[in-house]
Amino acid sequence: MGKVIGLLVLTAVFNFAHAQVAVQINKGDIIYAGVDNTLTIVVAKSKPGSVSITTDNGKISGAYPDYEFVPEKTGKAELTIKWKTAKGKNDTFTKYFYAKEFPNPTPYFAHKTGGELASSIARVQIAPSTIIFGGGDYGCANYVIDSFTIIVIRDEKVAYIKSLYNPHGVRFSDDDGTANFIKTLRNNDRLLFTGISCKGADSKSRHLQPMEFTLLDETGIEVNENIDK
Image 1: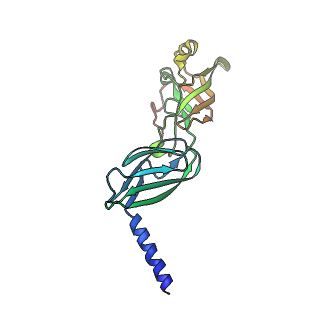
Image 2 (image 1 turned 30 degrees about the vertical axis):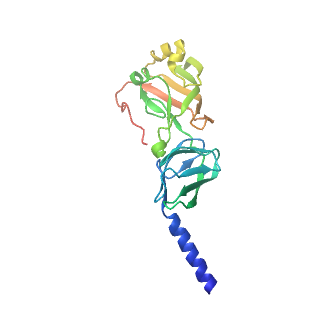
Image 3 (image 1 turned 180 degrees about the vertical axis):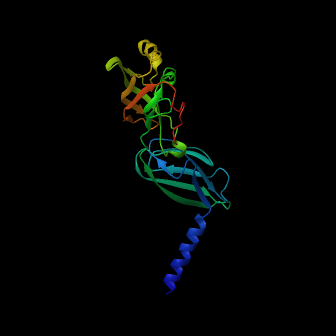
């Protein structure tokens, strides 16, 4: 009985000692592999300048109490927090995370993923872009579309087709022929984007779903329709 009581007391002291450590994820409740995850880590009653943090998965940078944590791979990630107490005693706390794969974005053009689009709106766009549905603070993550093929069907014939590539982000202006043709888009054209590829902060290449639009005049079309994030 005495051993059991002794064990319970030690466990209580251990938990109490480490209740002074607070770890907050500043972009939702999820840690993603390959991207910056902003953390705030506070150790109450620690000696100034004594807190150090290491990880067994990726890297962590920054200065107390704000850090950027970039897990190298998906799966378990361990943060080891070390500090000195006000009395000079060394102490340690380990926090465990599970790093998830960064979600694929959805391509969109003129704030739409397909369907009817006003031709006047299509003519002034600079390129397709991406968004993460349900991504919270990561909803506008810095994805770069580095390649796609644009196809325009006019009067049931292929009026234009061109594949574009730019590792820094494709724009219609990267190709004079495409930039000029975009300005000629008109009602009843069908505008297609295929072979869409992008890279995010984790440097992985992702192949996204194609998009197709039917260009009409603005009658009955909701102009500048916002995507539901």
